[in-house]
Length: 161
Image: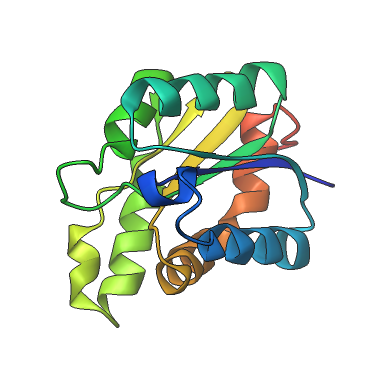
């Protein structure tokens, strides 16, 4: 199965072209090599709720991504609002995935407790928030990678019991 995947980066500096988006590159590599996915959309937006919400809705409803992976805006800084924007878009939360990411990474790095990312479902799309650093993306995504195919089969209605 080739999973249609979209990547959304929330970064003021990235949106202004002041920072290279290396976290999205890590996501792309993991999706293509580990998950066998295809990137159908990639976008960088500033840390603005309305822009994050609009991009998530377009990626799910227009591009029909099976999986949307966000990077950035998930810690404690005043402009870190990706989880709040994601909650306004999703219909059902998948708390176990976010908990698994935090638990896995906290064993190596206690600062993972500051990660506020959420996971949830909009229509037939799974949305997963990831941290904004390449290392954080790799560690958090690796923590759930083995369960993503089954989760995507369920979310897209293809799971056979």
